[in-house]
Length: 208
Ligand SMILES: C[S@@+](CC[C@H](N)C(=O)[O-])C[C@H]1O[C@@H](n2cnc3c(N)ncnc32)[C@H](O)[C@@H]1O
Image (cartoon, rainbow, N blue to C red; front, side, top):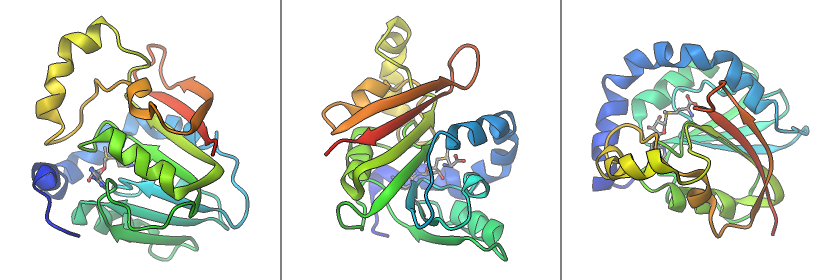
């Protein structure tokens, strides 16, 4: 994977201290993750892309007969994911790859799972456009994340923080509507992961 200055601090965080805390941070999301992935209608033979696959928490919820390409900029997160799938009968290929520059031809995948990724990637619009490019027409894109549904006073008040946060860990103040704007997708379903909607799931379909 090529050197890119915008990812340096993020790689540093995800290659050092974050992997230690990650399992603890993921505990409250355990049931929710399964519910969100359950929105996808898997068909045997489907090919799924998971940008920012991290340490592979989504992988156990994906049924057999589905092939998965997971990619990440953190070698340590990828190594943990690799360890998780060892000995399992799952067709998973892991790549060290920047999701903003996907090394796949257009219309390659049937589905995409973007779990806690769009709040983490440096440029969410660019990364989302790349995902839409590689998903087939009518393909499903699942997003579950801490995205805000539309611009509101809270988002406006703290949106300046995104400038700093996008370089290191995650920015929980991004607006869903801005991320998907201009892309050939429709929102098919939306669910809340908690009563306040801090975590939300969106099922989208590529239209063209
Ligand atoms: C919060 S973690 C989510 C991991 C996993 N999807 C999950 O649900 O547990 C975000 C992941 O995105 C990765 N990431 C950030 N920017 C990326 C990029 N440009 N390309 C690929 N992966 C990226 C990070 O290294 C990290 O592993």
